[in-house]
Image: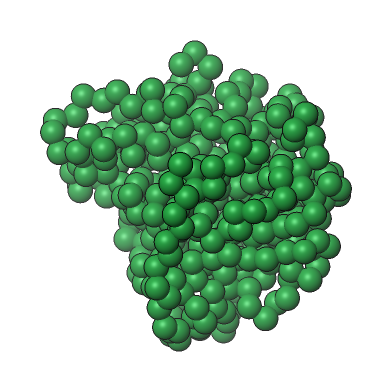
Length: 385
């Protein structure tokens, strides 16, 4: 096992302002192991709670990202998490955006440390026929309610985890992670220490870790502050309708466990599905849907290893303005059946990429308009795989 944990040299601070719609976002970088421009950009969005969006360039969501870039962030973030945390360790990735990130960080943390006592679990907005372990709220999100289900493996060695690693793509005020930590330590009082792992930490000055109730620390690739000046997004009637419907949880009558019920490893299952007959050195786009993002990433890694030019991205619920880092967008129906519009940004049908849309929902659940717009093929990861 290679346990080397080589980290890049830090970059100097950076302060800028970004005009976004009806306001201005002031960004101050205090410390960065990755440059700001390599990690993210900023966009305006229709959300009365927060009018701007941190658009990650490395997450494989709003912007198509090479899987090698995503893997580098997983590895670098995992390398910042203490290797000697008290075990067992529970890693939680936050839905929807940080599920793939959380699963990748879990995978590389295990690889880097050689530990065998680390379990991955992700929050979800889907109702399952399974006991709920905890609930918490993400106040600024379009879909604020999160569920965490009782893991299959939370027994025996994992009955009393002593360390909690919470993985999110960004931290703004720390409120969501404070809520998650409170829910998890309430459900699992054996937790002694908490680590928040994030790509960008904008929470400096909010002192949220003092409210966690356990010894806590944050690790990130960049830290700084954000300050918004100007109006919030207008609460139009269509936005209020969106807000109401977005709070609704989906229901999954059939469910294959890729992480909602806890997993130690799912890489091999995903890799077995990477059988595509593309011409050599094809340009390929692999699209995840909703909470289903880590298996598509593994497919993309396999295709890249076979010599193809691959990017990963995912559908999202968030309506973002077409401007700046968001060059174009497609709107279509939600394959999870919640009635909420979904969007896929920066996937230009004219860019010549062959597209694979991956989904865990039943066959035929992907909006035909999305398939037609990208001339895509769909890949189903259901129970009959």
